[in-house]
Image (cartoon, rainbow, N blue to C red; front, side, top):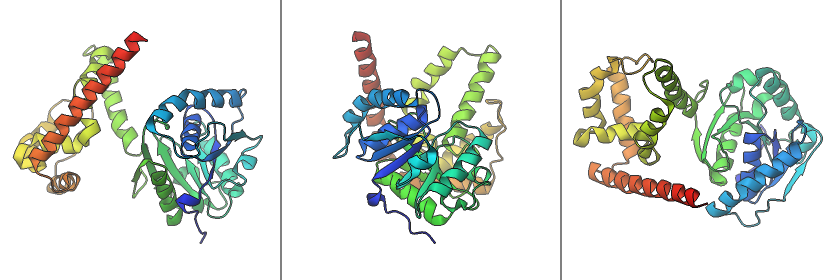
Length: 321
């Protein structure tokens, strides 16, 4: 078994692919005081990467830079293998082309040193499908960010069929160490968690526009001025827990469960079995952390007010600019 790099021992990250995602990752790694070795075969990749880092740096500065953070601590290399040489962690962000991912990840796995994790930013491919060409896929994992990676904290981490447990754990530990919010998934799922939820809203929105039921403007406002204000605080599951009042998730499911069969979406609803009900109730309880409903409501209300004020202030500042 390879001995993985401890999170605090990682000083250099190879960013393979310097587009929107790869460039955003590079900016974030730099802001955490890390050095970046980059590779991208596209014309003008170096200039494009420099522009991405420069554009992200004011926001990263406002969020707070790590000691020693240097936007110039980045080097561009002529091959992927050279970029990976000497790197303590590898973040692959190539285009979403399965055959390209397979060949590139095989090359990166071969070039990476012992104990170096190679994480893919793929937005939907399972690692089991991407790792088939690698001679040794044990260090290959998914480290799926949300765009832009320098600003959105979420990273979903999951291994493939042949990923070593140490690699999954090491990737999750590293991302947490540099300030990311990590979901360490226990099983592969195409699209992972966040993209599947986002895609469900997106497809329903397209259905409504196509049928003349709503405009894009109405759909956007229905989220920004509606449930979107609550989600940064509690997310959809804990939001529905609060919707049940003192009875919480159990009351909400028992009372509104039949509406799952109402034609409110083009998606088929799952059967609300006793097992699913119990899982949702138990999960809401864990998310609540034993806090009483009144405390959760007060937390939500404070945060929603803060979000509304912050958004309004950002819009006003934009209007003055």
